[in-house]
Amino acid sequence: MDRDLSKLSIDPSVRERARLDRRVIVGVAVVAVAILMIVLWFLFARRTAEVRVAVVREANPAQAAVLNASGYVTPRRRATVSAKVTGKVAQVLIDEGMQVRSGQVLARLDGVDAAVALHATQAQQAVAAAALDDLKVRLANANKTLKRIRELSARKLVSDEDLDNAETAVASYEAQIKVAEEQVKAAERSTEVARQNLDNCVVRAPFDGIVVSKDAQPGEMVSPISAGGGYTRTGIATIVDMNSLEIEVDVNESYIARVRPGQRVEAVLDAYPDWQIPCRVRTVIPTADRQKATVKVRITFDKLDPSILPEMGVKVSFLEGSIDSTASSVELVPRDAVRLDGARPYTFVVKDGRIERRALRTGRESGSDLEILAGLRRGEQVVVSSRGELHDGSRVSVAR
Image (cartoon, rainbow, N blue to C red; front, side, top):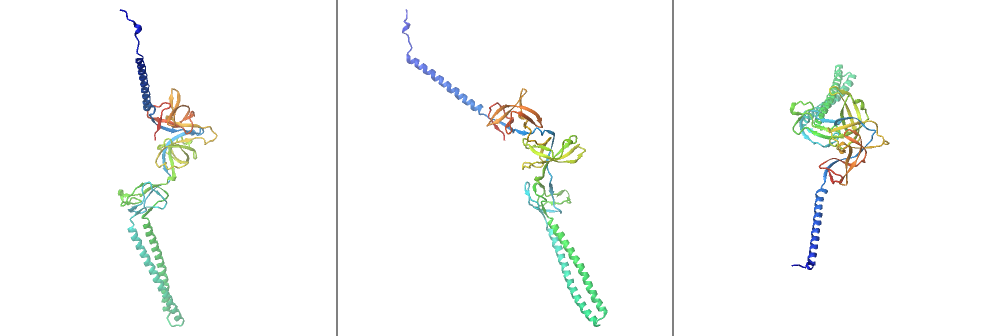
């Protein structure tokens, strides 16, 4: 039985619904892909890596390092302040970190015994002065008696013996007055000594500085010679003149010929490895240490900074040549900031929260730094180390 297929057809409404379903499916798929891309962008593109950076700085090629050494920051003026007499501490008026002025009272010792001694000598001085006044009165009376005896002797009313006795009395009182005057002076000196002993119970700062060590407490015994044994302190406090800070390094005697007074020096404190501090050689101590085969060199800072503290470790580079403003400059960066892609050096520069890969042309090494002949400008920040892998354009945060 034959069927007429020409009569078969699809209902147009069914065809329209199928077309609409396909559009909905495509739209949902597009939205899902967009959401997935946004999520991935938030997870990866916005994730920041933490980096440690260094600032590109300028170097003068005429000042290449001829010698490197290490040492410590030391003050030229440093004093452990002690009392001049042995005694018990009554007050300590300072603490570590306090700024003190020359003559400022740092501590007081128990001065009861010294005060009693002063009062005793003052009393002795008063007694000597009173005895002198009594002798002066006696001398005045003896002079009056002598005057009358002389008048009577002129009229032959008294014997020569009476006249001699009157003259002897005057001479005796005059001699006693001289002795009494010397006794008064001796009493005055004794009073001054006793007053000085009392004043020695007050410990004062010898110069302007900062207290770096507080070595005694109230109730402890102190002595300049440790007369009380192991339980006696020899110092009240240690004061450092922060304006006298300098660097002290030991240079091997084989290389001391490369160092001269006034020579430029670049110092780097261990506490601040990215801070280059300009200095100069103050003096070369004219003697060598035979055991270490070194010569001591003292270096002064061009400008002191409150961040520089005594006993800090420091590395120095002695520079050759002098500062020449006409010489073409190169840039310096830490060696850790330079990476290699095969034989081609490059670095990452931090700019506006992202990093930029920058090709470099490098020069010679200068201590822990590397000269950059092309590719960087002074003041730019380069990545020294990072947590995680870095790529050109990655978002980063600078570690503090």
